[in-house]
Length: 84
Image (cartoon, rainbow, N blue to C red; front, side, top):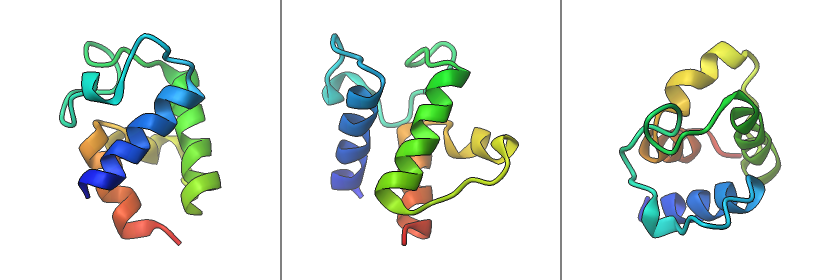
């Protein structure tokens, strides 16, 4: 699980061009949106694309993504259970 979390952090940093942030800067349990990492809805779409391209996971309804994208840990747990 730790390796998956680290991989997801790096993929998000690369996809969102977060050049000033390292994987170590992202708390596994901090919110990805709002007061945590401070991502927005466009960033959420980028993360959903990562899930589709890298892990074969489709999130049909954007409203379903909110609990999945709560934190790095919830994202990694979802990928672990649903990857193809």
